Amino acid sequence: MSRDIQAVVYTDDQGNEYITGIAADVFSQVGGDAAPKVGGRDAVAADASLPPMPRNLSPRTATLTAPGQSPRRVVCLTKTASLFEATETTLTLPVFNDVDGALFTWHSSRGETKRRRDVNG
Image (cartoon, rainbow, N blue to C red; front, side):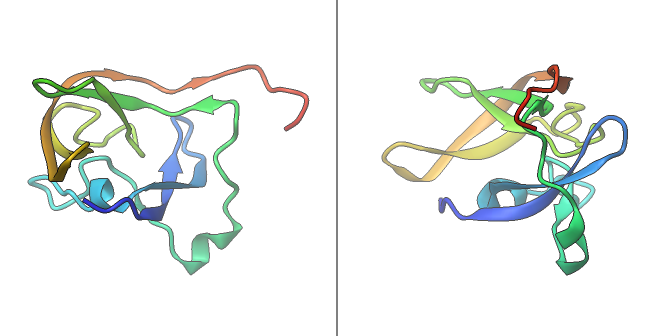
């Protein structure tokens, strides 16, 4: 599994859009609806004016587990992402010494949180 980072659009719970990056091999995994399991969309040239994700925003995540592996948290780019809502429950993630990765299973989801804005931005 490669570790290429792909530019994508994250949509917060209020509908604001931000540019961020996600592992391309994670974003490319689609569910039964042919949409990325983590939600979101590719960032295109028209999205160049979108701001980066604020540092005080902790994105929504899904926690995934696999036998013999540490739990992993994966960012879900929209609140309707099939992995976040657990309508899709598996994702292949990279693991040490295994080029194919391992199949992880959904364990829980956690919504986004915003911390008090810091003085630096």
